[in-house]
Image 1: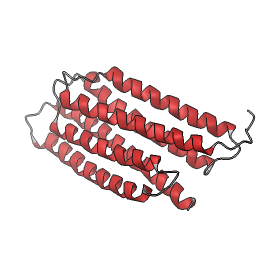
Image 2 (image 1 turned 90 degrees about the horizontal axis):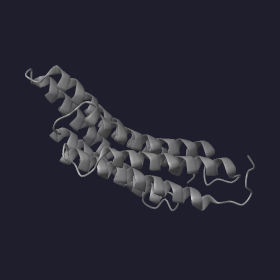
Image 3 (image 1 turned 60 degrees about the vertical axis):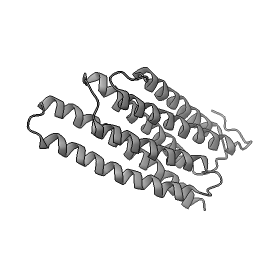
Length: 206
């Protein structure tokens, strides 16, 4: 594959902004799906559509990376950030898919709270990605993202503790919701991982 000698660094920033916006859309759809489940206005197909869109953006970033001689920051950092954002959307899709896969009959208030935190975390990630070129408010967004991740840890621990606290709960229900809570937490953690990569890029290129 031939490398292009004409720099196109702006395209990387545009694609990362697009990836952040898609991840935010996926998180917002997930929040609606969990909040309205089982009669949700958001179907699993809507989440799958966002997941496929994320895959296409990741492919476009890697394709651009493979054809550009000059990049705005390290190639490895570009690749890692692209795949980390993709992981966020993958985990969101997986968490929502478990609702149908496990035959869940109604939602849980803790999952709705996790989705709220997830949306807030992805909002900060998307804002940091948008500011990656100028780097004006990246650190501020990443600090706020970390606060959301800490809050997510607390909610997840409380949710799992509640599952095991009540002996009347069907063990199968415990297993199903434990998996769902952990999948939502994985999405929040993936968001923090992507944020850390953004932070590292800013520091390395200061």
